[in-house]
Length: 77
Figure 1 (cartoon, rainbow, N blue to C red):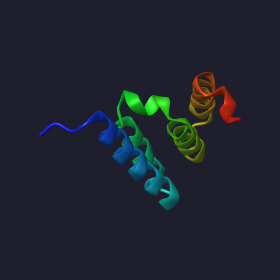
Figure 2 (cartoon, rainbow, N blue to C red; figure 1 turned 60 degrees about the vertical axis):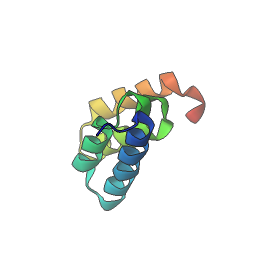
Figure 3 (tube, rainbow, N blue to C red; figure 1 turned 90 degrees about the vertical axis):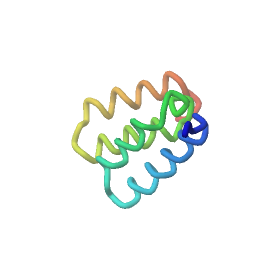
Figure 4 (cartoon, rainbow, N blue to C red; figure 1 turned 45 degrees about the vertical axis):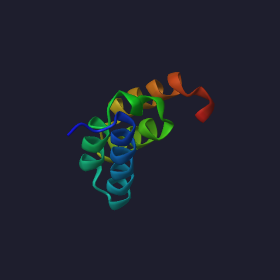
């Protein structure tokens, strides 16, 4: 059964928010990875990804992700 890409994005972002709030940063990143290309258009994707990487001590990746998000959503500062 095929899933609608929008549903996949919403479902995975919802799961990512839950995992982040639980402190499960690796699971948050996994959920974001499975969200599909449509998630790249959502500011919360970039915020969750950058914050999770930061929490895991992957600071260079967190900065790179934040910069990538800002290039898409500069008004989110």
